[in-house]
Length: 223
Image 1 (tube, rainbow, N blue to C red):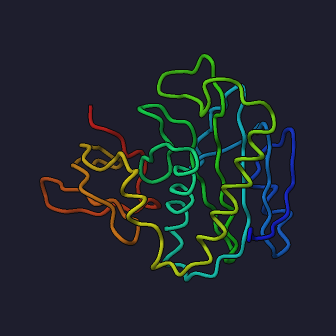
Image 2 (cartoon, rainbow, N blue to C red; image 1 turned 45 degrees about the vertical axis):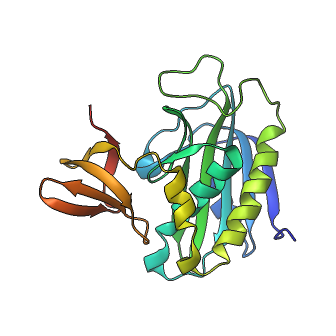
């Protein structure tokens, strides 16, 4: 049985993250917007928007201890990847081939998680390394439908103990594994896996290192 939640649907807003936090009243709330004028990505990055896009933000209480909060974006991402049949670039990018189609942003304060997902649904003439989910324009209702299915699955996943997060399913879709990568500030190595706590495992000339999403920026394939 689907978990009950309320929905706010908007044609345009500055940020669905801000609307979700402002209107959260203790029970799950999904905010859906066709356009964001000040949408943001991880660490405040600006989110590029396709002609047909959707911004989704799910606000919900988080029962887990703070040490487990870094798993929330990975769980939200693997749920989205399975729904869209796409891959994941650690920690929060949704990919089709080498093109990014969306991303996950999680902001937690006072044990309330606002889980955002920006999706490019259709992009007929995208910039390099960007694409949309659909080859043809899916119409204005597609974003709401995807948002409902994604929210149902995320809420169910967060009701489970954190020890049961879908680690193996994340690893199976993670294209970062096996890549030689660099990251800021000043790191380089080859990705060998993802730890049970969600950290990226990298072999470097100095030995094995784990990268936590909140501590580093811009993990990218080495040129």
